[in-house]
Image (tube, rainbow, N blue to C red; front, side):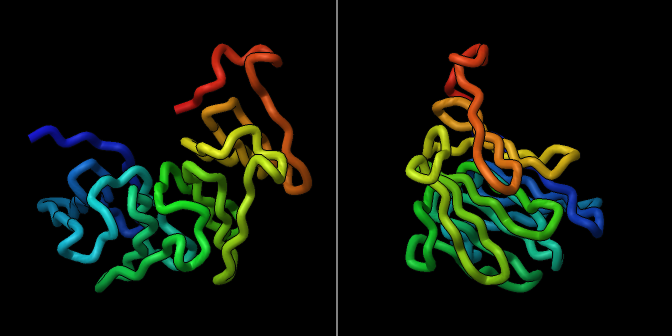
Length: 170
């Protein structure tokens, strides 16, 4: 069995959530629970796991986002407004928005609404592999075309032209 770990999250209650290519594992201190498509995940290839402000677990996979409430999964997909079901990265920012990086741009989930940001809006590349927030609240997006930084008003870019060693961020 070749299980690859792609994401690890410690929940506010201490459980550790592990996203893998074989589903989602939860370590509860002395045992594991294993969730798969049969349990309600959209896809077993998990790339990102985050906790939202209400303690819900958001699971980004190659089939969309599965949201676990402690009992069952609900879903966010292209049908609900995502730009793509191929989820590479997610982050909850300091004000509670969930940023979702896909192979077709960014999605921002804010109070039940989904907003999209793509190259046409100034993102350096649509394949968003990693998302981080710095201590000033700036959001950094690692893409296949370099790095974009969002300061709450506009996007700026860092690419090989600005001295980045390579444009493809993983």
